[in-house]
Length: 142
Image (cartoon, rainbow, N blue to C red; front, top):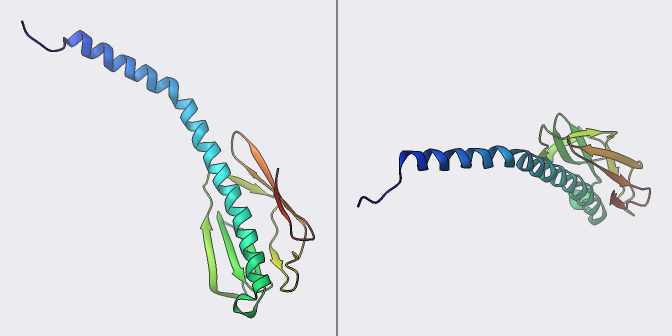
């Protein structure tokens, strides 16, 4: 007796694997999109809080702020973006994520208050999340 697989059995297994792969593709793409959205939202929250903490602690004797443009989130030193690029920290945002209603924000050194209230919408093709920061400097995600 010969041991092994027949050609028909191999073709059947390859076909079943192909069907399972095709059926799981939408679930995988949804998982990746959801992961990108959560990761990007967390980047915004962490960067806002980091700028606030840097301002409160007086790091480099300056205020700190956050700028968003061209798929980059930038933590910057100073009252406005472009003042001093030597301390910028840049974080890339995936191309599948869109950000709307953004305006640059800086935090005061005394109480960590933002220069403006901010409500930003971070969206993917499946879902949106809203990041807000109020006049007291509280950052929330909805």
